[in-house]
Amino acid sequence: MPEREGFELFVSLGEGTGKHANIERVIEKQLLQRLLNSFSSATRLFVAVTDVDGECILTSDKGDCEFCRLVKADPVGMERCRGSYARAGKQAEKWNEPYFFRCHAGLIAWACPILLNNIHVGNMICGQVLMWEPEELFWLEMKESTEDLRQDSEVLLEAAHKLEIVSATQVQAAADLLFIIAGYLAKAGTDLFDYQQKLRTVGSWLWVENYKRREARENEGAGSAARFFDLESQIFAEIRQSNIEKARQLLDRLALEFFTCSKGQIEVIKGLSIEFVGSLARLATECGIKFEESFRYGMLKFNELEKADTVEKVFLWLLSTGNSYIDLLADQKKDEGEAVIKKAMSYIQNNYVSPDLSLEEISKACYISPTYLSRLFKKKKGYTLMEHIRNVRIEQAKLLLQERDMTTSEVAQSVGYSDRTYFCKVFKQVVGLSPNEYRKKFLIQ
Image (cartoon, rainbow, N blue to C red):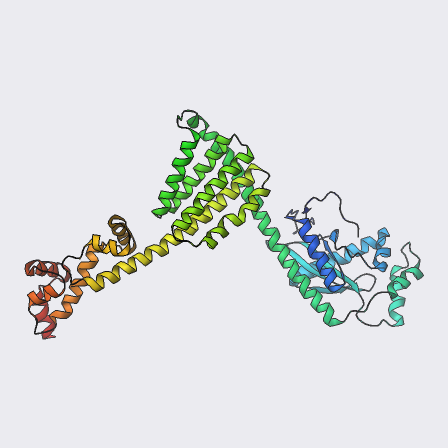
């Protein structure tokens, strides 16, 4: 099976017509070759990748058996092989599973479909083998099917006799493994296609926004370093306040600043990107995120940045990594906020009897500023922290008023109100009844 020339990357799976319209996907050839070779080493079987028309694109280093090489050396034989592969591939795509077939020469092979975005773009073909000891009739049929080829029939038959007999169990296991590999290739191809789409999107955005903002930047007096520091500080501030969308917008602005101030020099942009992501990693650590988790988001991706050979790839890395950190910090802030609210509510429940209970005291117990606690509580609960203290006290007062042996003044003092009159006023605001009216209504019930 000759391979196509000029493939730095493995391209153009599925160049058929009709419903299989021309589709190009990029899959790393080196990885694919390694998978094919590993499969052949493990199974001792030949495997190839074809397009939907049966044209061979790539094969394992373990080449065809001697018989197949002789057949394919003839143009007529090669065309018949392509036809066998194309027909088998269509059946495999129809059922979306390995399809076993007999090739035009009578040997057993199987096809596994490669689908990208649910579109059939190619096949993995494995074989050709014998699955039983052939009878004389089989050899006669093979001789008849190949007699029009420009090959010595006796030489062909001698080569066919060298084929190994593979058990049904081995064949099924190899087919299952090949089906898994085909599925992996489909995912890899889709992921990389998405990556290429993102690259194009980033490239377009970068150049359009740069053009729009060029005149405005020419009129700015601040130096680039000052602008970087200012934008970085704003991003961190928005993250701390859980303004995630604003933080993303500022990240876009920072990326544009990197581009314009570096004048498109890729190594300069890489350096600026590393510094910024390093600052994000430090912020993550300061916010309580474990170093191992932060490392996974940033440092482990630096090898991707190192390999980036275009400005678009660098900025895709910067935006992707930056937004991953923003998401990580947002989740941390969310979890942190829930924990703070829970702690504050627990403290109130245990200390509502104190007349001096205050926002300052509660925030101190939670180790955060009063302003932040007040804003966070209102954002999370929809009402203020002081309203929560009031509600806790009034609910407890309602329980105590159901007891006959406590006066209103005693109830007030038991729930943190030293002034009976003020307690009665607050109680009526919340419940709609005075303490005495509530007690009478409850006792009547």
